[in-house]
Length: 419
Image 1 (cartoon, rainbow, N blue to C red):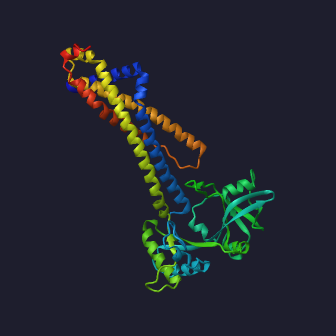
Image 2: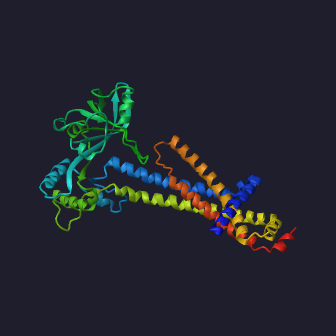
Image 3: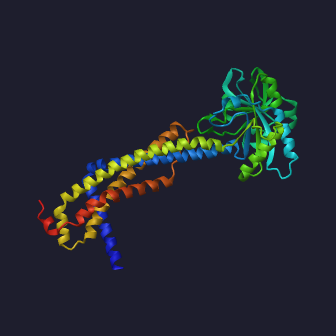
């Protein structure tokens, strides 16, 4: 118990002496900690970027529907056998009808419903107001079953409106705000590709997918009305909802078999369709995250290495400057442990100062990004604070141990005679 009390007293006294030295040599301490500051900024921003990408990816998947499989002509990702894909037959609306019949007749099917979705870029007008680059979707009333979108106002079209091909639509939030600023868009008329269309709903604001494209710059209408407005060739895909997303792999296999039946493919024939899922985006994001991590680790390691050398050097200088003081303390009964602890705490304290300053700089950069580019996925986590402080402490211990050990082993007689 006495040993513990003595150690606590020595530790507190070491902290007091360390902070006294840092205050006495402020500029030297800041310059010494510069490498640590840069390293902490790098590791914090790296962690912030990677965590933000993960968070943005997960929230974007939720908007896309994490229980939905996509039947399309092309895969999501790099294509090697380009001619194989370009010669494939396009996905047709009739494929969805056949697929739904197979799902209905399959007992214990893992699939719920197949929804055809056709897309086309267009401008949307209302009087003198116009929004370009709106992605117009044509689909069925079953679209409501596969999306998790809320409505700012109104509703989606029903089966009667969809089957009749009525010219009704649901606007994305940004489209509605641009065409009807400060007023309700419900029951208003917009013009799409020269055709009038009545607004029956507005989606709630959703944001962007990893800052690449906006979910709020869209318009959804009945598929039969879409075909009347866009007579040229357009891309169609099938979105198939899965009953249990935990069994996505099994559902994918079932969907592959069902689509082969739809396409009347014989055993041994290659699939002439692709089944995509959201995890394909993750496979494309992983190299980006690895690149950020490698660059961050390189900068962090280099900065901390330079910082550790600087701290070790300045601690050696401090030992030389205070050799007589060390001799006096040892002559008065100070133990090696006490001297070792004193200089070790001083080195760690300089690193902690660097860590705190680095965290402040990193947080300022984070706030600047957050306010300047709100859609950019960054997230500042308390975990990063803990990691940064641990890195600072470890750097201080490693860089300060050799000088502290040398100071602790000084002969008191030699030290007292040092000039």
